[in-house]
Length: 232
Image (tube, helix red, strand yellow):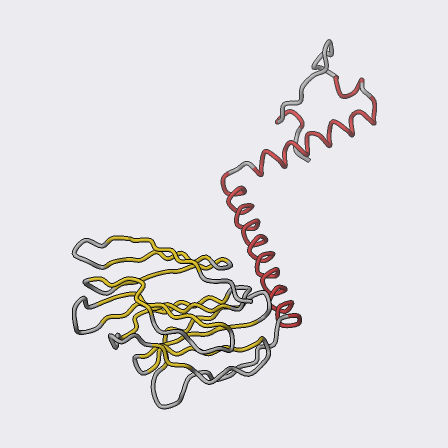
């Protein structure tokens, strides 16, 4: 057993250092010896090597708990996750790119993508069959660069895309709209620019907002808005 003389134990007020432990009785002596052993353990844990070992063990424990939690989440997802049902929207024979989709509160959906340098659009009710794709393109015959679509809770669909073409002004942002299940409108020029343009739109009820990047000699951001008639 380690000698008590090697450790400092605070004395009670008025107590003499000599024979202190003997006068306090057997129970008091056991408590003080336990305190000394505890202080010894704590002091040894403060040694650099011991602290380093403690940190490494603690780190392993934390990583183990995190890994166990991640594994549990994986099995939980596998047990309670959704089952996906797939369908092919694009036509075969050429690449289809830039897909986007929107779903409203009535579970009606609209999807837009690009195929054969033309914007394609299709609609479906959730869980139902997708419609035959409609081709959307302006009279400029642009090559689409990006796509966007939204369907609001009135089931009014708006599609938009940026595009470039050989003739001046060489680029623009275009929009097209339709009521769910009805024919698409003619394509409108949202913005025409000197170079390629990119846009992001958002729709709330019958209000449309757009922000547009005009890739000119000095790129600039423009904003536009529009109001859609509410459908009966």
